[in-house]
Amino acid sequence: KSWGFARALLIQGTERPLRILCARETQRSIVDSVHKLLCDQIAKLKLDDFYEITKTSIRGKNGTEFAFAGLRHNASKLKSFEGVDICWVEEAQTVSRMSWDVLIPTIRKESSEIWVTFNPYLETDDTYQRFVLKPPKNAVVQKINWNDNPWFPETLREEKDNLKLRDIQAYNMVWEGLCRQTV
Image (cartoon, rainbow, N blue to C red; front, top):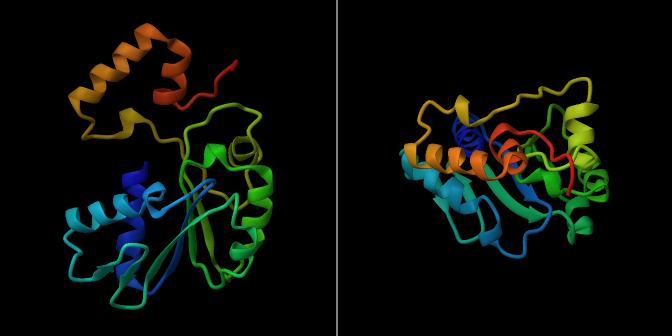
């Protein structure tokens, strides 16, 4: 999921100037963000000549910019984050109701979008409630699992199969995208 989202954002960023906010519930440093993932995908897509990578940001020659933020401890900073075209919230299963309540009205530019990637944890989690059980009317919800990956490596297949034998509930959550029934 993450590779696909990263690639889509990078490619769209070459087509037109975008302001992209990459967020997660807790980000103590840039190491906690998708910065490294995006940098790796820039190299794989051979977009090194288009994107300038710094320690804390990524900028395209056409004005596209990627910014990174944690949600939990940055409510006031987020409220002043203007002009976001796309906000990608990674590992969104941990995002709290309060963080969503601050973030969603902040992403208010005409035609702006919020992209959410996560592995569900509990059905009662706010992210699962908000985007899977009761999604906004204009939402596109797509479940993507390991079997949707045509390049799924054998090493991971073995790990997946071993977890299935060892802990079916963990397997269902990690590999099949199902919520845990109990904690």
